[in-house]
Image 1 (tube, rainbow over the protein chains, first blue to last red):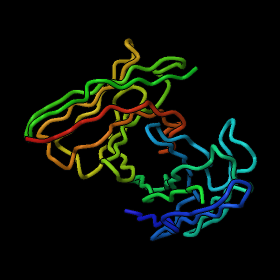
Image 2 (cartoon, rainbow over the protein chains, first blue to last red):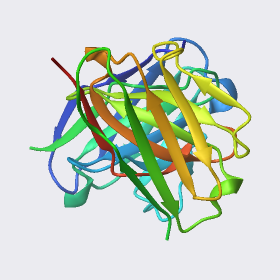
Image 3 (tube, rainbow over the protein chains, first blue to last red):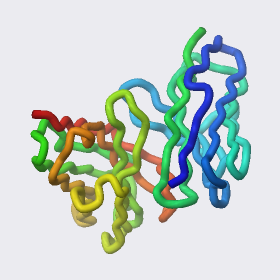
Length: 108
Length: 119
């Protein structure tokens, strides 16, 4: 099973700042099948990025994904008020599909 | 628009059973792989099970194998999760999610239903 480790656990930033979230895999993610989801309190997760760098339908271009192999990054170029939330990475390159433990982006 | 609505959660004693349902609308349900994913209180996400569009192929996480059974009724646009021999560690919000083909990539999720296993 691939273990995904996200860092930092919490990111304290102000609106307008850049957010950089990391996701490291315990082994290489096949075909860079790495996704990012956003979750707000009491809501279901929302798909942001798939295949490491492709934005899902309707996702603003301030969200971008990069990386390959075992190291992946989600970048939010300029934080909007609605971006303060929990973010999870997930690998779907090999079974069982696994998620990271999450990074909380909070208002500083 | 795509909608997934879970139901059937509740409080159950250890060793008990529960059946979750997920009603799908806004897309051709019979064409899609579907999954159940859970989230324990204050914890991260754990994929539980998936089922193929026909219902013939199913797959489970090791943690639930032999106790949880996924099924679907394409005529009713519904997904199910039969949960037996429940344990305290099964306590979680259970989400149904639509998959993009066979890949474990989830583009739509329901709002979830809470299952609490406690005596």
